[in-house]
Length: 293
Length: 167
Image (cartoon, rainbow over all chains, first blue to last red; front, side):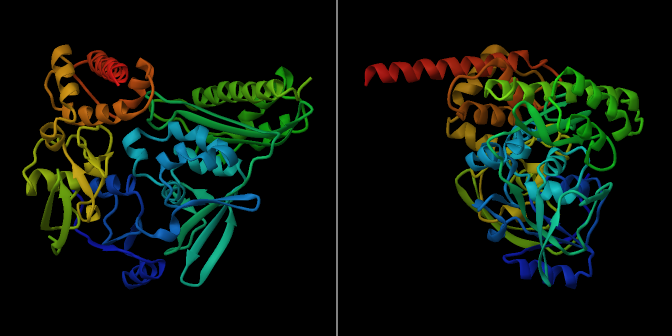
């Protein structure tokens, strides 16, 4: 299908974008990479009167280290995230999840800010910023504000952003020497939306895990952390005993709905399998580093 | 209809200027306005990969980009890649290995193959398959496509080696 007619404006500054948004009285959409918006327009799931192209806003570009925080510009394309040496060094969970984000040609256009603002629960990066304790830098005509990623996702495609606001950057606390992370997902075809995806992060010192963050993709209406499962490993050795306890606890954390292809019980089962693999992987990493007994 | 707006871009090395409706995707613009029908539109939602073109050298779904948003960009379609002979060895390998049947997906597959083969270093068949994950082919079962890309990989590596020996 073809999109319904709309007007188009390429914003050169944030101010221009805000002014256009105000003029359209909200009957408009911001477009970054457009990889979710254009299919929605083509399917006529959305029919705004105005599309405001924010993809050329220079101030939303670039990756930079600011003290102990990595600032990732919202317009960083998935392919740039995949190959960025800074992200690999300071926020490696994003690098590890990036190969799973859609297909190569989508990664050439899609942006990290776009996927987070869109808040698709089956997208990888929204869940990963929960595991990373990231903060979001959001701009509005009134100025800038910072908000934690945890709590940002409020419902299906619903976030803590007010109408007209623009996500400018993602701030990620940099990885410490004892931090470990891993990502994996199960999909019917590489690059498709996963049946379940999971990213884990923990600090492992003397074989004991702290700061456990287990974030799941495609298990409900929002990307979410598994708090009970995290608690089962927190201050424990990530051994078979604590891993089994975490897997058991997942049933309390995840309540996915049945859908036509994937029963809820199957999704929870797959989530348990993934979590077990990932925790063994990060425990193994720490052994290689000589940190675990 | 909404008001047509001017857009200019470089398509296969030539500057083009047209007036388009903002809702026109780059794929429709190439096919309808420029009559470059080598680019195929299948699903029009970024799934099938038949519509891939190069935008500033990178593979992009022309169904997931607005023509107006391509202002100032350099686009290469399968026609341009064919005429410049950049993908002549890939096309030959596809022909030799029978890596197409109906041919609908082939323009997009060639663009992906071109991008895969630009990567440095050796590639496993698994990596070639990963690279092709965004292209649907309902005829070949992919095996012949992977074979063809692998053949080009080996051919180019052998050429590179002999060029080094000659130097």
